[in-house]
Amino acid sequence: MSYTQEVEARLRAESAEIIGRYPTGHARSALLPMLHLVQSEDGYVSPDGIALVADILGLSRPEVSAVATFYTQYKRHPNGDYLVGVCTNALCAVMGGDAIWDAVSEHVGVGSDETNESGRITLERIECNAACDYAPVVMVNWEFFDNQTPESALALVDDLEAGRPVHPTRGAAVAPTFKEVEHTLAGFLDGHENEGPSAGEPSLLGCKLAAENGWTEPVAVAGTEGEQGGEQA
Picture 1 (cartoon, rainbow, N blue to C red):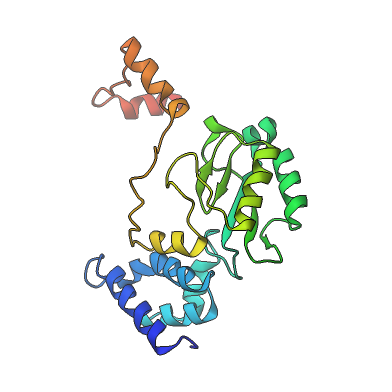
Picture 2 (cartoon, rainbow, N blue to C red):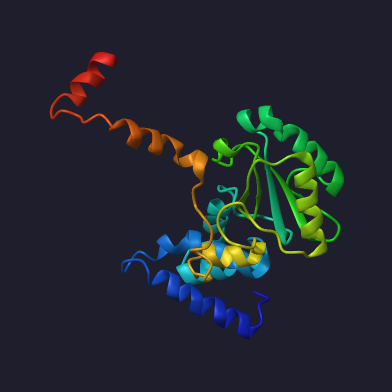
C-alpha cells in the first residue's frame, strides 16, 4: 500500500470506529461504509483502498473488489470533484431530461461515467433519482436540483466548473464535494444533516389530501391477508 503513515493511521482509526458500530464478531458488516471511507480519501475505490480494507477486515482483495464492482456508488476510476447525475428515465425524459442530458454532455464535453479535462465534473446518466414529483431532476453528489431546464443545468455546471457554491433545492445548503459527501456516507456527520427541507410540497401533497378528507390506509383483518393473497394468486 502506498498511503503515507499518517494517512493510513487515520484511515485505520476511522475504520475501527466504523467497525465498532456493529456487534462483536461482525466486522465484515462494516465493508460498505469502509468503501465510502476509501472514496473520501482517494475519490474512488482505489487498489490501495481495497488492499487496506481487505487487511483490516481479514478478507481477500477479490472479495472486497466483488462488492465494490456490484454497487454503482462505488467508482473504479478517479471521480471528479462533482458527480453530476442527469435522470433520463421515463418521467424525467418526457419532461425534458433527455434534452438536459444532451445539452450538459455537449457543454462539458464528456459522456456518462466520464470526467472532464479539469477534473471538476464527472457526468452520469441516471436511470432514476427517485424524485419524479420534481421532474426533470439533476443531482450533484446526490443532492437534489429539481425542476431543471437545459439552461439551468448548464448554469449549474458552469458554477461547479468555476468553483462557485451551488445550492441544492432540498438538503444541504451548499452541495459538498464528492470526497466530502463520501466521508458522510461512511458515517461521519458533517454538521449539515439538518439543513434544508427533505420533502417539499409536491411530495407531501398526498398526505395533505388524505388529512383533509379523513382518508386512512386500509387495516388488514387478522387471518385474512394470506387468504386474499391466495385468492388473487
